[in-house]
Image (cartoon, rainbow, N blue to C red; front, side, top):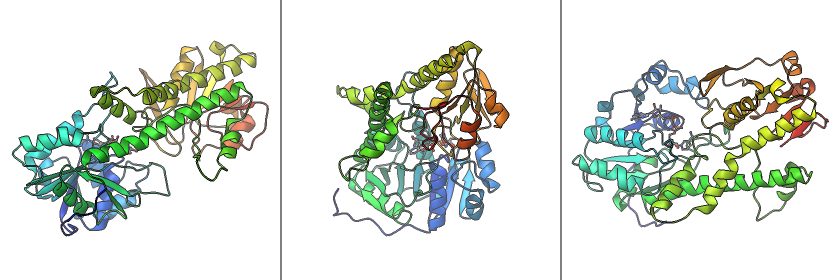
Length: 432
Ligand SMILES: NC(=O)c1ccc[n+]([C@@H]2O[C@H](COP(=O)([O-])OP(=O)(O)OC[C@H]3O[C@@H](n4cnc5c(N)ncnc54)[C@H](O)[C@@H]3O)[C@@H](O)[C@H]2O)c1
């Protein structure tokens, strides 16, 4: 990090744009509107734009009131990129999934940047927020803008700033998480600083866009690797007949040199299972092997299978053949208290149990229906009778709204992948 920089005066009061109004873009757009910017929010999804125009939200962490308060003059949701022509700065928050081959799919960024390049006014700043491989801002976004007659660092300014929100986390929101950013040139960094300065409590400027990209990938790869380690520890502990959760709690009393991570049924969501693959893809381009990252991915992806193996053993031990069994999965969102099922390990747990012949249903208070392969499942309501009817209940996602005590009381067999039953000591309750 350097500090001999010269950001221009704050831009607050001007028009800015946010492209892609999802989990990342919508909270950012609202935060910018609350700061005093007039925000044009562009999304290709007409239903989302209509919902926002009505003052409603489709993101759990964003209450309807937060949209309603600013929509109209301060926040303008639209599908029309031309509305960005007045913007002094635009943040791009479109998806960056993987292709079926496991390679990065940055086509949404390419599309959005090409659209933007045609409408941007001179002197504007473009900040990429989508998670990408290191170098993407410089190698993809900047040249696309340059191809359209702009000169990067002269009449258009380009930076990367990773989004670090944690959906469902009530302690930290968009603006109170320190905002890392880096410009493609020094002047680009200055402009990004002026754009984001009024919005975020703390800015953390790094030396380049590529450095900022690597910050994000370090953070999420760190999580992936540590979760894989503790998942492996959990399987060892089970064989040793030791409670991994107690081991972690005791280890976490060490005041230095240890940070607790917890095992679970596998990784989910749009970030932790995906982002390390962006890094390993880029490393491969440079001939660098990413053995650690790849191994973590393998261990984490094996967890649903491990969960199913444990469930099958428990059902068999209870005297029931799995093909004759009814199993209820609790929670299909990828983590507690969110509606998002992307990459959720619960989906793998359900289809692996079906592959073994079990009849599987699910209950999730936040997810009314979910598609797995060609099949659509609908959330079953939870009652003592439904619980008592199962051969096994598998707690995959411990939403606050799932009544764990009631589940443990009525389910004949409960397998808990999240330690939600820590306080329950009963022979029919088993933990990962
Ligand atoms: N969800 C998270 O918790 C999280 C956290 C940190 C970083 N990220 C990263 O942020 C980026 C966005 O993720 P998200 O979860 O907000 O995705 P999302 O799917 O919730 O939202 C993306 C939005 O972009 C829109 N979109 C797609 N193509 C577009 C285009 N060409 N023009 C305009 N709009 C377009 C989609 O309709 C959608 O509304 C990804 O790179 C992701 O990895 C996500």
